[in-house]
Image (tube, rainbow, N blue to C red; front, side, top):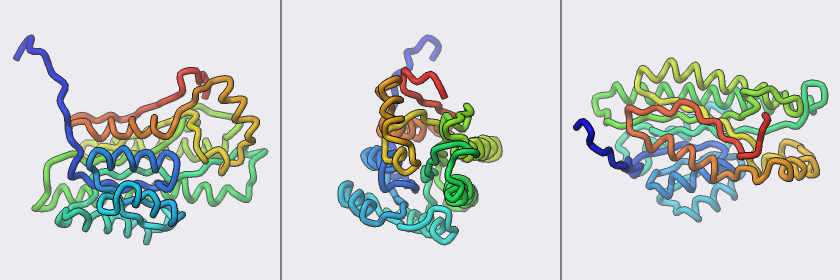
Length: 267
């Protein structure tokens, strides 16, 4: 009614099913904990079986199940989505939350970075993201058109980076993969949004996790960054953004979130 005060409403996530890649640690593990806490059944992917098993035991194997393997492998991607489809008594419904989180960094530019690591990074960050986005979108669209379709949102969430929007000379090879991912996400939003599938890009700034060590950033460099702009983000900060996105009612689409530490000026 005109003039009526709109009260805060809760949009529960219980009963939804998520697929989360790169879930063995860091942001992916934090997203899993956050969504599982909200009642979402989670299928988690990563290459390290023990870390995934530990996460499942922590949260409850009846609520979280692992699919170990390479996130860029078509067979593994289909297995993740198949496991989600038969989980939690969903009666053949597809996963309605897919979080494309798996990725790896690489210190340096095209001139200074380790060229021997380029192909693996490109495979994981771009091809893996594109293949899962494609497979998830095709299944979600088919599910919406099926006779037994149910109401409710479908979400594909893509983890980008601030360096995929703002060029950074200290990580330009990694940044180039995130420019590609950002483009994929925005193009998919324009294509899939009108068909009822929400695609959201989340672009974190500096997040402290094992990412820095894997990427080859020198500890003293990252310590200087933290001293200058800290406190930096935690994986849990990013996970809250993901949960905020999927908690929105079906007609509300949060298309893009760029999240930085307060004191981070660049990138």
